[in-house]
Length: 301
Ligand code: C5P
Image (cartoon, rainbow, N blue to C red; front, top):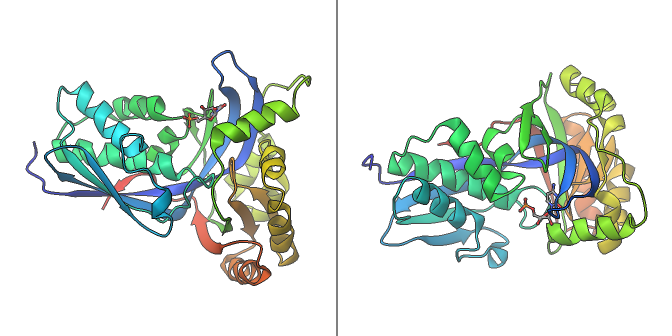
């Protein structure tokens, strides 16, 4: 033990600026070319010593956050403890601001946050590579929540290469009522593509160039999400949200990851505020949040 009495870690949400999805693999996962961008909406995970593993949460969607060991944050503490021969005697408190089951990696953020918090609290001193390996075991998006910034994820999304970004991009996120389960969206992708020879996912060079240049207009032209049709098929009402944001002046609109959060790229911060206000007024979403990216990954505060 390090003698620390509490550690708080702040972890950002993500948007996928490219999500190219291949056919289903034998293990049920899909190969991806997944370009992640970390954006400034955050969950905070606080780890405090306790008699036994316990999870609590606060935030607008707290009734939809599991507080048992199915919470990825609890699993992160258990995995780290098991690696170091410890008991996971920790209370994890999650201050939740990232939409729950929204396609913005909120659960993954909490897992990465819990891992970094417990590592600091217990003084386990795990290396970056060990932490990344545990993240990959926890879920495909968890390694990116740890590193943040912008990165290309290959494999099932966990094999990361950092990407250079030449500026800040301004986004609006429209929060939908309720969530979508990621496995259900991938199943719908498979159903929609039954009988189709799905091509190998390939990272877009135009998109990488737009990120490097910090060019929002070029990025808008290169955004893509192969899960969007599946998310819209399961939640047709998202089409009206996408239309409302574009009508309000967004450069481009797309479903964030597996949805149902929708993401709108704006020209600048002022335009993002206008788009957010119009989305709220449109009645096509529950809330509209403004956030810029890239931002850093899991950080002790
Ligand atoms: O890795 P993670 O636990 O977040 O994945 C959740 C589910 O999403 C998987 O069980 C699988 O159904 C689907 N998935 C997939 N291919 C990926 C990532 C996730 O099919 N590359």
